[in-house]
Length: 112
Length: 111
Image (tube, rainbow over all chains, first blue to last red; front, side, top):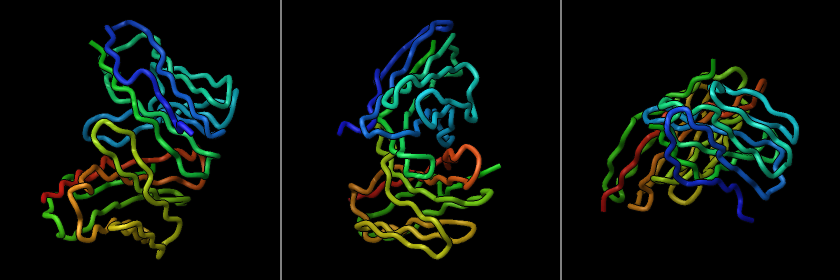
């Protein structure tokens, strides 16, 4: 099992550009989520999904979109990047909403 | 609103010098309290889940305990390889079931 994988590892964008952060898991987990991690702050939930075709907003959803067309993949889209979205992004997955969440290696995003 | 506060922010120990990290929390109906370890440039790595007050779990030099208001991560005779940031998170029993994280304790163990 590869676990939770994320691509790219690093990305630099200019303000206004759009991009998609990829997340995949091979553990047949139903629950997937995206967090961002900023210095001095805990990880904060952006969006989550309890299964294919079902997504919902987390604590800080503005400026981000998600979709879940398959169990394995949960991409995060930045529609129009802003410097405030400079952060490290982590994807996590678990068997269901009550199980332990396992994290990917992260994507470090810089928006100039 | 669920809240998690970790202390201290940073801790420097000598190899073999035992200590404890604190995680204070407020949550509406605790479903679980989680401890993760995070190395620089890596994702959080799961350590423990605690479900109810009085519960304890151990793994090598680490022992996690839970009360109704806080959790402690005890590190016994630490080694340099224990150096990392330790994250605490709580999950409520209702709602989104998302994890609410503290900002972490940065541990450095010197040889």
